[in-house]
Image: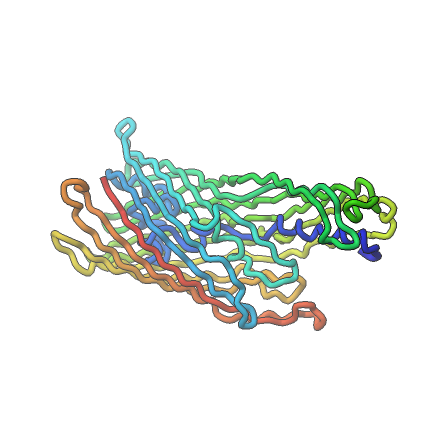
Length: 448
């Protein structure tokens, strides 16, 4: 906008509100923090070792590995503490119920299983968050935590100690339009009399997942999975219609309008391929190893593309709205993520069995140093975890099958990273990013 009249500026300034309809985001809370206390306690290395309903996320083929009905119910929470130049960024926590179900059966003599997994956040089912395009933001954390996740899967056991499984996962997002109609107050905007109309829909995104598992020996399981990638493009509008002037007086502009359209990448998840092994080395010691490839190279700039159409009568010639510059490419790259988990049978008796767990994961950053116009921050991540599990033989005459209670504690460390701008007059300038994420989970696993 190169020139302006106060009345025109008053109308156009209201368009700023519409920016809240688009926000950068990446992936989902389960992808970021894990699913279930046992898996979290072992660093997420569960692609070949999930023996519970968490297989709905880690590898659907493993659902066919048991003849028991399995129900897992837990609560997990993760709190990021992320900062730029020592100032906290107030990234949301992820808290909610993690629920899993696996039901076995047979068809034509073959063992099958159907399963479902659910993460239900206890704050919002979905949300979007907007920051100015130049403001540094933690791209992989900004919009992930508050998402509803649902997976539905089918698995079948084949000859040769092989099982395969596949399913569909669902993620939630919002989409909608905002309209204001009435009088835009001028010269005092606080006298505006506008009626708000919002049309907001809860949308779902579907993406596939599939897995295979092979019991190569009685003590070694090999597995591989594919998880589909997706992006959600959020196309939303913001409209103001009505007169400009002082309520009760003749308007300066009759029937003016402002139409703003915002198109942005609201949610993104990279396609993932994982290979894994789970080895029961001794009756007491089990090791698990996962290595995953994440396709971040197709990640697009998540900032909003804005289109504005304005009619303010005689003041139209006083307002020039230049076209938006093209969004710079983020230049993310693919990454490989290794995970290692260990589980130790600490004590076993007829009344209770105790297990202790530990894990480590390293996730390099897919984001380059932010030396240009973008400020999409991400650091390398070192995750260490610990956990414990208690297995009871049952609960009297009501629950005859074993019941497990699992606890995990997880810490992710993001070492300090410096971002040096190529242009000395960059409005943001050089900065440093660092942080940590603390997470905990408590789960109960039931078999029938």
